[in-house]
Length: 291
Image (cartoon, rainbow, N blue to C red; front, side, top):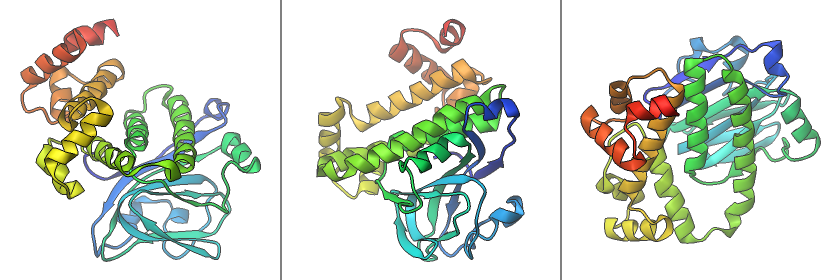
């Protein structure tokens, strides 16, 4: 999961609008049990603050709940939201939502607008009649969200163009996962949940005991099932996720090797360098030069 809560409301140019979809806001928040919602209300524009009592927006929003539960109301329909729920908010449609006081929740969200989502709505691909998707926990969604978060934090030239592409990917992934969800087996869901935990803790240091505790299952069985599907242990998969994120930062970011090591919770930058070299065949400094 991202380190620390954050939210950003973004600007975009006429040039950005030519891509037919622009990102207007994005964020990640952990709402502890018993907390008021939304937290830090003063950081939101006026029209966004009445999320628990009812509001309409002039943008689309996609919200992914990774932990906890709550409720969503769209017009006169009420839905139960649980971990693994995605809900879509549509422009001009009255809605409200909030976490359950007993559990709180963790939310990832992005706001967007443009003729591209408008056309998807006209074609019936997305609709206010189906605002809630129970798709489960998927690392692919977290990967796309985290990529968008990195881009909006840095706001390098052209970041809105990249956000446009990634927002389309996010929508496509949600619709595709919803169609495939009914066909999944028990082990499919198990592996998806393990991948989700690994992606969510990408910036942390965790071990197999932590994963087994989160999954509430025997760690030997967990490792055997995961390896039979991926060819790797969960820890090997976790290291590959970290190396892939390091590649992105070396290519697009302005971070030193030491900064990247610490951001990915490697306490020893030298160990990170050795691991990166073993996994890729080149050192981090060589990767940043030749890629």
